[in-house]
Image 1 (cartoon, protein in one colour):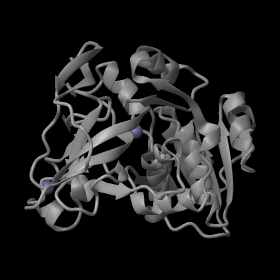
Image 2 (image 1 turned 180 degrees about the vertical axis):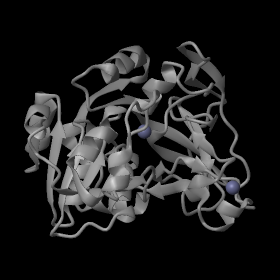
Image 3 (image 1 turned 30 degrees about the vertical axis):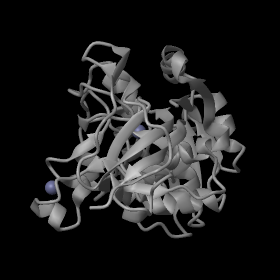
Image 4 (image 1 turned 60 degrees about the vertical axis):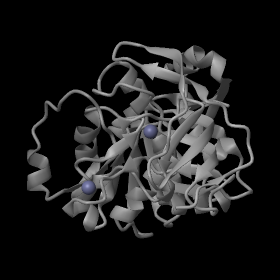
Amino acid sequence: MRRIVAPEARPVRMRALLFDGRKLREVERPLPRPARGGALVRVRLAGICSTDLEILKGYFSFRGVPGHEFVGTVVSAPSGRLAGKRVVGEINVPCGRCALCRAGLGTHCPSREVLGIAGRDGAFAEYLTLPARNLHVVPAGLSDEEAAFTELVAAACEVVEQVPVSRRDRVLVLGDGRLAAMAAQVVSLTGSRVAVLGRAPRKLAVIRTLGIETFGSREGRRFGRRHDVVVDCTGSPAGLSLAAALVRPRGVIVLKSTYRGSLDWNPAPLVVDEITVVGSRCGPFERALDLLARRKISVRPFLTAVYPFERWERAVRRARGAGSFKVLMRMS
Ligand SMILES: [Zn+2]
Ligand SMILES: [Zn+2]
């Protein structure tokens, strides 16, 4: 296979942030080597996501370099199509051989690796590797900062990929973080009536600047069960029971939250009212890039701060802060 190398001086070692199961620390290590069909990517920006914060608390069994939201430049790739291009990348690396992979459901492959989350070093480093087929070229009109939101916007797009939303539907998004903000924007594009129910007044105020109706939790209690679709982006176990209290009989609840901990709640209302519950995770990158490039989705108001690599500790602390939407690190 022909390996095309972009004209760029390539060092042999790189800086990375390594999680050893207890804490994150800066290390120097050799550049990762792409496997067959893989590309070497120099990371420009990496986003800190709530999953990363959970990993750093030790809630996952992951050990290695975290980080799965990134925009980077391809240093080497198996074909000329990607060499030197600015890219974002899908995070699941499936085995390609099992029944689910053969059925085209690689994101559900039981032995998949997930960038910076499971079995594969991620984006909190100067370089990473991914299969070339995972990479998508960033349209020229998008800044690095905007492109760093692709994974998040794709996850929001997955809601309408899985659940057909019509313009007659009333949709309620639970949560006030960046995923709630993206999901509300994506669903709005269907022409349906969308509102966001959240807790933090300052975050809701930012979401309101996009023309999306928002409500605080106290107002929400008076809503009653009138929503055709409720999308839970709260990231907390309370989200599902709240959703069940706000969705109409025969309505749909879309669960975007993953969390540690369990539900202490009787799911009988789901049975009695024949509610459909849809789990929803990663989504289509091409659609997300298209929406971003056509300015259909606004991400700028949700960029909290960009820190240089050297200030990664501060970046992580800021990402944990209650008022933060999205914190990025400039890795190289
Ligand atoms: Zn994430
Ligand atoms: Zn597989």
